[in-house]
Length: 467
Image (tube, rainbow, N blue to C red; front, side, top):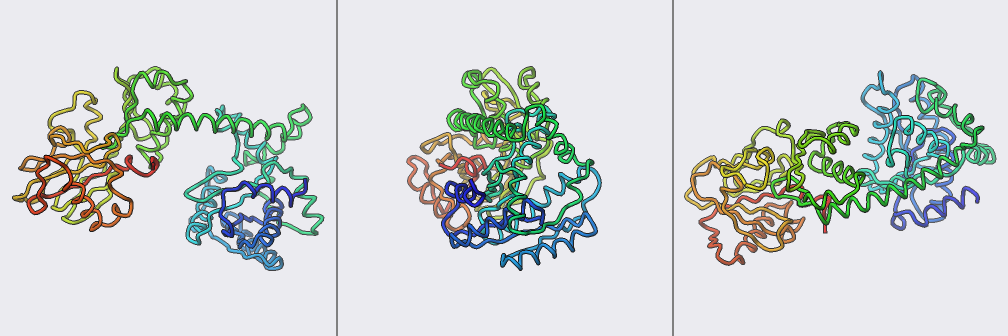
């Protein structure tokens, strides 16, 4: 199959809208130049706008000149080109990884700003083989050994790798036929970098009947297994994990014990990323060990507690932010909560005055606490968005808040579906939506003129669990 046909075949199943623009990462090397030329042919045939993005890391003295030279090649080919410059100085340890992080960040940011939904990358067969070998050497599991994905998503941008099963020889042959010259990056031959060392070993593996193609094919098959594991893990999350309105998760013990260890680990890693989206580093080895042997531990910015009822995952109390003042009529996002209030209140974390019997005290330390700034004559009604309940539920506020408010607090849980996304972002719309919902609740004794409202919505109620 020709490279042109390979590109056509790839985009027949790629998740991209008709006529949508695409970008390609272009270093000026053989791989990215080949992909850019192929994409130009495909884009012209399908009435697409193509732009090539070159990142100048400024790691080497010649990098800026080379980026300009790449632009000249693109101008000769009538391809739109943009140079993105890394502003921070990159040097020292882990240079390759830091440069890659900076490169992706710049290109993805540009795509987001320009309304480009897909970024094409020129990783090829040998790149995939090198990735698999490097990760095997570090004891990686299914996720690591599955290598790079042909199609993935990062920060709302699709990442496409159309050449992932194409050999380097085929790429060079194409460029020679086009009589194209490219820029050789000296870092690609520097054994200081791990990828270069694995690249040099590939012929030795091939001599012993472990070819780059065999490694890449294995990676594709392992990737299918990874996709299946992710599917069943997320199905368990959606069907079995309880997302509490106070910002923590609970997994019933019997349902948890039925799951294979690999599913348990995937579910736990996902929930850690949800509870602590800042991505605090943690050791997978320690997580595996603690999951089997320890009743309670802290990792990745989360408290994880195993009880007779199940497993609780909550934010680690040591990383809580300082209390904030929310003025009347304001909506504020604070520590994974959206809060709206019709009166001045202070928000912080504290356990409720009367602890709930089924939740560990340590977990309840991450409950919200409300303090009224100036005593009002009005009643206080706290409205909490919920996924646990399909109908409106009323509870005594003392069991939810350690609220320093000199009046009785009424607490109402309403299903999240009653509040639309557009209303969450507009204070006036949100207030009106709450009034309509509250007016329909029987036995609430709600009076708009005599009642202050505080609306609380945990990030767990939205974001990644959309219906």
